[in-house]
Structure formats: C-alpha cells, structure tokens
Image (cartoon, rainbow, N blue to C red; front, side):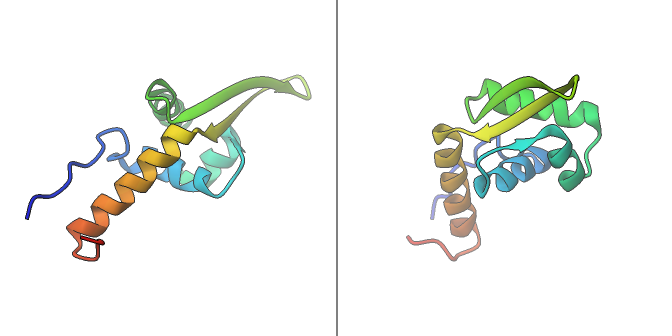
Length: 98
C-alpha cells in the first residue's frame, strides 16, 4: 500500500490548527487565532503568511477602533487542501475510503 503524500504546508502543527479553526468559520481575527492556538504573536504571524503565500488563506488588514486588525478566511484552495490532508491522514490510520 502506498501512502498519499502529506501536504507540507499543512503538515505543521500551528498551520494545521489555524486551518482547522477556520474550516467552520467565515473568518477569524488575529487575536481570536492567537487565543485559540496559544501561539506567540510572531509565530502566528509567520504561519499566517505561509498559508497566505500558499493560497490557503485570504488575509484582510483593516483598522478597528484605531487599532490594526488582521482577519483571516480560508480560501477554496485551502479548504480543498485541508480535505485532502484529512483524507490522507485517514488512509495512514487505516480508516480511509480506499
């Protein structure tokens, strides 16, 4: 049995956590993601940038009450990549749909 390759963009704990959180949401702001992931600001920022560069997220920077506000949304490409990643993991665990 050959295993499907795992997406290197998603095969990172923090990036996978970010995408997993966004799957069920229209969008989430930076502080929400920071709180839910427990990441540092710097690391979260770097991982959001990597996901954006891969085309998995759309990032919108605005101001909210005179403070910068970064909002992230999962793109169609990101959702497709996440679904493929989950399917591959199921196959690794022997619960895939052959």
